[in-house]
Image 1 (cartoon, rainbow, N blue to C red):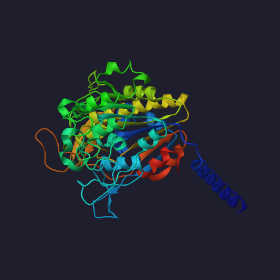
Image 2: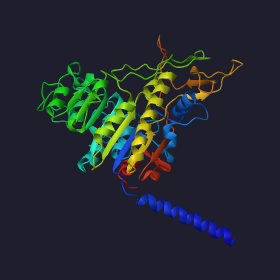
Image 3: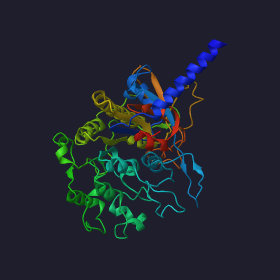
Image 4: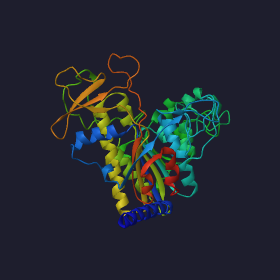
Length: 447
């Protein structure tokens, strides 16, 4: 009995010591946030098994601490209390870690209100907090850099679709003509983010419309950025020559979302696509890999005051929606390679906190092949030849709407909790089950 009491006391002391360590951990000098859009447990497992085999491990598997995060958002309503929305979108989830606050879907770092077209209260973002502290800040994505996830850091707007000047018809009260902050593209450069890398050039140049109101009235967002001192680049080869003297830098490498690294057939009903491997090397040479953008961003941001960098693997989600297993896996593998770049940097800079998570879960599932042909899943399936030499069936079964002539209807998000991995100062704060809103304080070393 005495031994049991001593063991219980020792365990309690250990837990108290761990809690104290979390509570009093010195804040990291550098913070790198990796966001795999739609990258739930299934998406990670599908990529791991295909590329590395059942016994294989990815870079994210090397991080020291793991946990889970809840991602629920809010349903629109009159307030002040709002019902939970268990299956959120990327705008509301991004607002959670960017600001530490909950909001309704479609909102970008604004509070909820009765109607989505009425601007909410502006929430301060973690990028704004760190920039005010003198840290350099960066935002990297394989989507349009004005898409929901990157936008939550450097924008405040009532609808995520108001990405460029020509899109502001949906946000009429937030144009610069009306005294507002303007579109997401305008706000991103007005925030003087030190590094902006991604797609979405069409939102910034002549094809994306002209700014209405303010000092840049009648200009493109590219021209506004250049007036504010940005160096503007559009090709992979231009990355190599960049130095910190070029900051701030705006790199837009595609008119829209960047091209996926891999490609392959879209899933089909029943038995699915015949067993196959994926086609790699799909991204054009003028569009840099996510790992290359991450490496250059870290190089440019590195300084004695520290930095904050968000890196999004955006098309994991987009290809999950499209039921394209190969493109989805390729984006997950590319995302993991970018994590490897950060881990190598952290090896020499241990005062760097690395956090990897997803904004929400998604639909892809590994299911068994049914040799009888009578128990196949009712959704859309693909059959992939994995590293193990085995066939892995990946199924998508959350589509809404009707079939299109050349593709299944868009698959929907799911509401499951998402994994989170971390390493560096304060990383043990992610242990257990936390919420996306907790990240705002974890980034700052406040738990």
